[in-house]
Amino acid sequence: MIRQENCKVVSNRQIADNIFELVLSGELSAAMSQPGQFVHVKVGEGFDPLLRRPISIASINDGTFTIIYRRQGRGTSMLAEKTPGMSVDVLGPLGNGFPAGEAKPGRTAILVGGGVGVPPMYELAKQLARNGVKVISIIGFQTASAVFYEKELSDFGEVYVATVDGTYGRKGFVTDILDGLEADIVFACGPTPMLRAVENGNYAAKTFLSLEERMGCGIGACFACVCHTKDDPKGFTYKKVCSDGPVFQAGEVVI
Image (cartoon, rainbow, N blue to C red; front, side, top):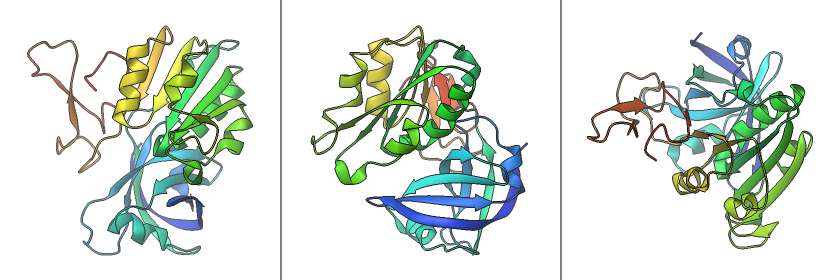
């Protein structure tokens, strides 16, 4: 059930280069259960900035939840200034997340995260491990200063790290590591080129991809985040990333 709440800031700390981890408390956390969903955050007090910012849910706990965001514009810079005790207007949970139940106990799930696509993998890894699924995480970044949540993900299984410039972990891309592993199911979230490479690689019988798109309303009303479906050769059929997704099975939409 979607709800709006002024959540209290528990902590707001920088965990990598321009990457912040924001922990919020409120009754909204009780409505969260599916990994891969997101919240729509009002970063200012008035109407400037006008639009909310969609941020994926990284962790769900009793009475609190965690979101991780990149400080890169005016809105997220304002969010980075929030301190404990302040409130943040949050709408959520939104969207359809990862179908964790598709990964069966005793089977192997590979979680692939790129940049700010890493956060939703934490809650997913936590739930899969709790259900008896073997979890392998592959996380990719541009450089060493951008790496985060390697240790946190290691609580649930083996973790591989790739950096484009080779300053940490393996030099290259997440798919360079994925090529040498076997999985029953793959879950991925990250930039579009990464998702396209994961989809084209056919690394598992089932693959689920979480798309990153610019959003307006976040609830499916404005059609700002539509994408074409693959089963319509004429290109007239759309899905909305915010409400139909952000998670789709590989082959469902054009990325």
